[in-house]
Structure formats: structure tokens, C-alpha cells
Image (cartoon, rainbow, N blue to C red; front, side, top):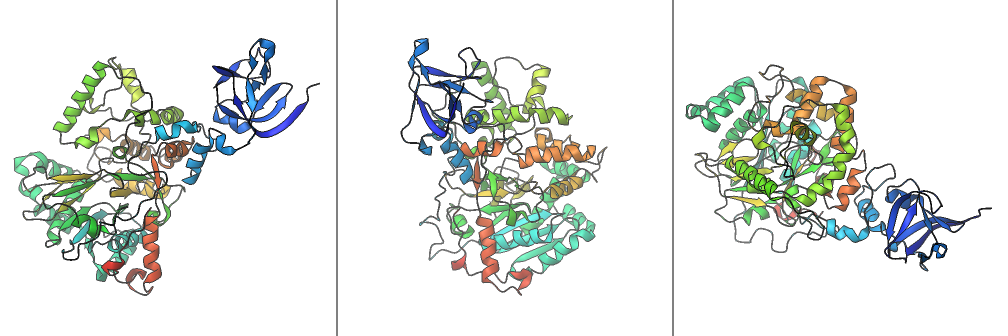
Length: 598
């Protein structure tokens, strides 16, 4: 008779070298489903007639349905195989550190997820972020802050917006005023749309605080176009003609550039203009406010580029992302390669192709930081790609093929066949929006030129002397991309309709658009109008935790949680009169403009 002796959660250690088998059933002839190296600690649920049955969480952590370990191998001539630990200390269980790291960030591992925790010994090796640490012990630098005799820089932030709720508009404006911007310029793209009126009225109610509203009617746009340098210089071709062509197609990027042209005229006398969208916020973890950061910049710096973090909505519906969303993916440029993790050496042919690809991207004007590769980052994404492949196959998205010159080579010496290329043209498994950051330009005469939505150039379209913020605790843009299912649908209904293209959606022919795989996927899904496919995609790729991806990312240092925006807005609500414009009162004195640490 087999008698079970329950010892729930008891820890054992292997003592036999080099390894001990875990079998599917309590029999030496049963299938080996896993092995334990000498010295490994494992958790046991019970002893069954000389066999140790693994605890459920032990089996789950090792990705097996069940497992049994022989207690003593004398009958097989092996001697003692395992020993019971005298101290049943959870700290000794190898998966405890990973579980705690994920739980501390609020994204715990669950047994429903396909991705599993890793051995605690590997945690230090796989932490990729140099921008932050697991403890998040940042505080404003003692050296930051305006110098007593120095003039504080005059700062402005501008954005073009449409389809954004009134509460979001209010939070966007007041957050940036709270951290030290003196002017917030809001360009409303569809002011005659009745659904925009509440947001416009709220914004105009903040005019006494430094908020400037532009109602961009069709007449306003025509005047903005004809007074722009793009229109004036379109006969010279290049970026000028291209921007006018995009305008004629109704492309939003051209409208953003025209709005920034107008903003640069409006902020004459200011020192810096930051161009971001209404779903973005500037975060300065180590500075007391924005003025202290910009004041530290050397006078020769003409442009500052901020890496962006991308939000992870943890609720299906979001009303005000600034108040509800706190979890973000860390930009790849803020992640380093593991120095200890063993990675196979890439082939010479691959390295040659990679260098040629880099040179092509640099020749197009791409920043050097944006064409770096990180094999540790790629390896961290591999299990996520594999877990999500079933969703890719279910969605069956038919996206325009990548331009060959933009296609980053795969880590192989083989020439990619058409089938192999198709297999690697997967949907993005980390960022689903842009990854090349946003910029602020120094306002000087002659005025800089907005080039797209991410950078500025000189008046003659030459590169500005730029600083890319990429060190520990560097300022970043929090990008609340696609937060809230209905907000995401509303955004892409606007982008997928009303353009002067064959199907009304944004052009898929303009330069660089085919590399924006998620953007193209969103376009197709909106055109398809399948509610089932839309929700499946949103939960898988934007909320991003259908297979347990978030705790996996957390253990690799690829996620961060910050409450700074909420704390800034809540402090303002608490300290200022509720009956003032927008319910927040006037800007606080400079000495009270302090950003809490993360």
C-alpha cells in the first residue's frame, strides 16, 4: 500500500553529481521531463513511497505538468540523490527572487501565463536597464536647480490634437505648467467638430495660466500653409516638396509640422520649444523641474532629444491616461547588453550585412542611437514572440512588405528566402508606436525648421547640434500610446479615414511608413472592422500580458512604474483653489515646483 506523507512546501537540495532526473511518474522507467543540476533547491509537496512529488508551483516554474524525484538511488548504485533542508526558508527557493521582483512592480507571475520565472542566480545577469534600478532610489540631484544669479529659461510646449477628452487636455496642460513650462500651445485640428467643443472650452479657460489655444479651421490651415517655409521653398524639392505633397493627401504629419511652424512664431522670445502630443508628458526623474534641466544645457546645444517610454494600460478602458496609467516599457536605447549572459557569436556574413544596413539608415538621417542592435534584448523578446505567434496566425494580417533596404538583417549567414522573410515579419512584441523619441529645439533666429514630428533642423534644413538624453535617470517622454480601447479605436478611425488616398486611410506609400508595422496593423484592423480581431489584438499587443509577458519583462528591467504625473496633478488639485480656471488655480511659484522621485 502506497502511503502519502504530506510535507507541503518542503525544500530539498540535490547532492548527486552531475544531475538528478525529474520523471513524469514515480518510476525509474518513466519519462524524464526535466533534470536538476547538483546543488539545486526545489520545492516538494509530498513523499510517496520513496519518491518526492514536486509542489505545483515548482512544476509550473519548470514548465512541466508534474514531476517526481527519486529520494535515494542506492538500489540503482547511485547513492544519496537529494537531501532535505533543515531550514525551510523561502529565500533559498531559486524562483523566489523573480517572483518578488515582478510582484514588487505590480505585475506578478500567474500560473495561467506561459512565460515562467527564471532562476534567481540569473536575475542580476539579465537586468538590462542602465536607466533605472530595481530599487528606484532616484531623487533630484543636489546640483540641479537654477543658479541664483542665472536667468531661468523660458519654456514652451506645443501639440496638435484631435479627439482628446477634456480631462486629458486639462491634465496635459496643467502638468507641464506645474513642472516649469510657462506656455502651453494647443492647436485643435477639428475645432468645428461638436465633440471637440468641451475640450476647447476647458483649454481656453486656462488661458490665464499660460495656455494658448489655436482653433485650426480650414481657413487657418490655408493661411498656415501659404505662410510656411515648406510652401515657399517647395520648388526646391526635398523635404519642402514632400511636406506639401503630404499636406495634399491630408496626412497628419504635415499638419503637425505646420502647427509647429506657427508655434515657433508664437514663442518668439522664449528659449526652448518642446513638441509632443497630447498623450505624452516630459518626465525628469533627477531634476527639480524642467527649468533646472534646460538651464544646465551648454549654449551650443540647439536640440535635445528625449527617449520615449511606452505606456502599458492595465485596464481595458481608460478615461484619463495621465491619472490612470503608471506602467511603462523602457526604451531599447536605455537597455544594455548582458555582460554575463552567454550568447552565440554572430556570423561574419551577418555582421557585414548588419553594417551595410546601419550605413543605409544613417545616410537617410537616422540617429546613430536608433540603429544600434542589442542581442540580449532580442533574446528577451524571443519567448514573447513564440507565445504570441498563434495570435499572429489567427489575425492573418496582410501588411505591405518591408522595403528591402529598411529590412534589418536576421542573425544568420543564410540569404533569407521569401518564406523565411515572411516568418520574421512578425508584429512588434515590445513598442507598438514610435521609438525614435521626441525633441525640444532652442528658439533662435533664424527659426529652426520642424522636420516630421520627432526632430527639428536648422533654417536651411541642416542638422542641429543635438544632445540625446540616454544616461541613468535621464529625462524621458512618457508616451501613453493607445491607452484605452475606445480611445485607440477613435484615434485610428481618424487616421484610417478622410485622407486623399484610394481607401481613405493614411498613405502606405510615403517614405518610411512600411517599417511602422504596428501602425499598419492598426490601419488594416480598423478597415477590417472585426470587433473580435480588434479586441484580440488590443489585449495581446497593447495591454500585452495575455501570456504572462509583463512579469517576464519586469525581471529583465524592461518595465518601470512611475506615479510622478499623478502626484504632480494631485498636489496641484490639493493645494490650489478649486474655483480657479480649470479647478487648479494659477501656476505655483518656482520654489514650489518640485518633481517627486519615482
